[in-house]
Image (cartoon, rainbow, N blue to C red):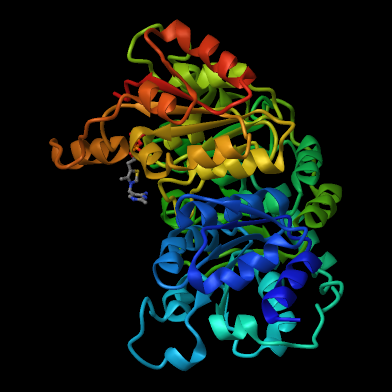
Length: 528
Ligand SMILES: Cc1ncc(C[n+]2csc(CCOP(=O)(O)OP(=O)(O)O)c2C)c(N)n1
């Protein structure tokens, strides 16, 4: 068969359900082969969205999402989404077309060195030079993308290579190496440190969600009774309505939760990723005892010098620790939570208009069950969601907090609805991020994927505006005008809503959640 067909067979062999793509001349053979396979082609309106969708698919399933684009502009349009998956640790395999090998040594139409461009934003990245190497290259791309810590890989397929004929077959899967386990002695030492600590704290990151270790964390904490702070991407690892939860941390301005860190003498960092909230913020004097529980060894950082590293399967490590860590009294940590909950709930019943973010988040929480999914774009709204929106289950609040790329919200909602069709999905965007990806509304309509997209409408790049005001007392280049969002919804054949007072948002959202189509809800917001 031709290598484009073999590559398609290899994708089937990997269990690939969807390829998110935008077509091009150099990928003709591949799209044609895919059309004859069990893999479903999801055609998008901008390659960046294809990569965002693949990344969010990967985060939700643990299996690499796949995106496909042509050479040159197609590939460079993918780059932001590929980088997002790289920094947010989402398994993603990108496939990019390329000119025939006979052209790539010289000036040639649309040719740029895509492998070179994508090198810094992928874990592995390679040009396929011969049809016979396709099975190994595909297996390797998936294996590396999905291995801890997951991320993006890229395979470039030159046009002539896609047409070469080969006798090879997909490589059967072999069981990956079993993840290591920390030694019993190390676990004992860690438990002794925890038992000796006066004010221990757990910092739960998104490694827990990836390792499907939320159950073990919950059991560990039910016994140990140590308060938990999440990173933004760790939200849902532990339920925020449990008295031991201190919500999430990610901003220096969160006075209450930062005070808790100040008081902590020991931090058990489980699945914590330094890209989210650097240790310099919560351990500025490097004086805390840190126990690192993760699938990989700790990044080197002068403010993150773990006393012990428990590297291996996170869930198993916590299960072993549970046996040795002594329970604390039920009262421990109670007073810590009060202030944080007060902060989270303040303003949640506010009737003012434009709406307070707390009120919007409270209403979204009312409209969704514990298992439904809220996808956030990036901006001021993300910071409110991260710090004020209670989460109860892993992967129910999807936030990009590593790469933090605006525009991920709508593609993320699409991917979430594809992976979890039985759940309600709501996308929250700023008016800036919404216009970066609103073209994908057409994709959602075409694919019959229904979810409300609510726009925090403030006519500005809100979070940057706030930072300018804080730093300089004035703003520059952050204000803009918006289209009529209700009319824009109409242009896509969708229902658009505009909130005219605080009390109409919740009924609008509930109505939109019942609709068989996506919808837009324009919500004027007062961030001040
Ligand atoms: C692609 C990209 N460009 C720029 C930024 C920097 N940035 C972070 S937040 C933000 C403002 C977002 O504005 P908006 O989408 O309106 O949301 P708001 O802050 O108003 O809630 C900007 C420009 C970014 N994170 N990603």
